[in-house]
Image 1 (cartoon, rainbow, N blue to C red):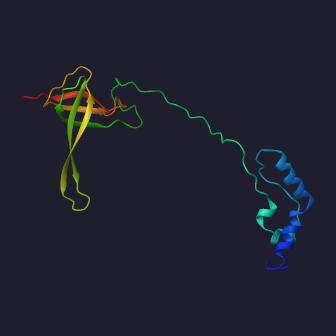
Image 2: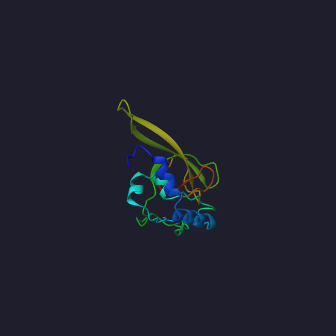
Image 3: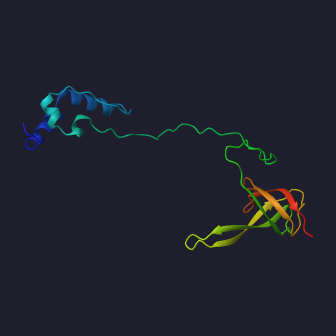
Length: 167
């Protein structure tokens, strides 16, 4: 039998066998997902049959249940970075621009970056909002800050030390 002729007849013959009909009825009755249905078929039919006729598609019902997420222990904000974290926190050094807010500093951090196209070194300044628990730093001080969890809308850094006092 050739592959180009009588394909429709072969597919109909496979679909109407009693084993396939019983398997389809069993799937319709149970909502569980069926891995595979073994149907004894002649070798001639297997060569020419369409794959969709051999294993009927089963539609999933209900929500998909995923494995629960395992949460890790929180790291205290007072703990200094001693290298125990798998992903160490960023540390930046900058100059205090403003200390007018209570327990908050604005620190300007200069970053030297190579221009992507021209290669010239460009200075970029970024303002960071820093948590200062004791209101230690004043305007003009050089300070070291460390990344932390969000403390407010803009505050994502905390003061680790005052490197140099303003004169």
